[in-house]
Every structure is written in structure tokens, then in C-alpha cells.
Amino acid sequence: MLPYLHTNLWEYPHVTTHVVLAGYECELAESSIPKLGPDARWCRPEEIDFDDTLPGTREFITLALKDDLFNRISITFESGKNEGHSQSQFTVATQPTLFSEYGLVKYWGKVGDRLKVRIEEFDSPRLLDYEIIEIAKRKLADGYHITAVKGPDRAFKPLLNIIEIAKARNQFSSI
Image (tube, rainbow, N blue to C red; front, side):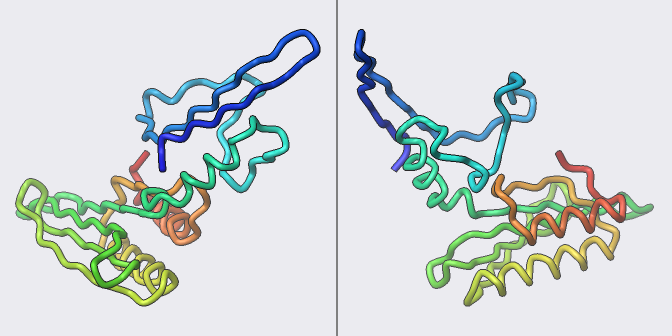
């Protein structure tokens, strides 16, 4: 599927140009995100006007969005250190399982210790999204802070809701 290569010949009256579009999926580190000029910007896939892009761009974006990595999310919560108690962490991550496309993996325990794991399966993405939001609400109500969020760059309503809830409670220290 990826990397994706698309070639085109652009013929002009005075010259023929061979254009190659090479598309690769990658994960950018926060510190390595390039500064964009005035005519460039980061955008969500649904904002792209493919009439203004190189031939092959639509095909590459369509392939990339079908990749499971673009649909998975992971949220890590950590509790503050209380007197006499170690700091705890709790992570939820979406991941397909052998029996369901809509799996939820939960990891929890004391920071630095071996974490416990539980896997749950859901019949639909809506049920999975609902469970993620409910878990986030419970963890935030218990005093946990969100310390890491990984997920799709495009708008993912449940993830955006969770982040807004945490920010409103001043319990968001990620990114």
C-alpha cells in the first residue's frame, strides 16, 4: 500500500517534464515539524481541494486514510503523587482484535511497575467511542491528568470531546 509512487508526464510546447509524486507515511516529532511559508499550511484531509493538487495526491490520501494507524487512538492518564501513594497510570488504546474490529485495550498500574492489561471488544465504533468517553470522564473525575494523546489528525469527535473536558478541568498536560 505505502509508500505510494505516482508518475506523470507534463507536456508543454517547449518541453516535457516527468513529475514523480512520492508519498510516505511518517510520524513527525513535535520538535521536527517544519515552519511553513505563507502559501502552505497543515490541513485535515477533508479540507483538501484535489483540483489544486498534483495528480496522484487524491489516490495517496485515500490509501493513507485506509491504514489502521489513522483510526487508532491512545490516551494516557496519570494520577498525581499523593502522600504515601505512588503515581498511577492508565492507558486506553483502540486496536482491532481477533474477534472484533473495535477492540479497546486498557493498561493500568503504578508508574514504573509492570502494567495490568484488559481487552474489551465492541460491536460498533459508536459503542467503542462511548466507552472511551466514559472512561475518560471517570479518570478525570478521579483526579487523573491526560499526559499523552495519540490519534488521527483529522477531527475525531470523541477524542476532541475528551481533550476539551480535560482542558476545562485544567487536567491536560499533553502536547
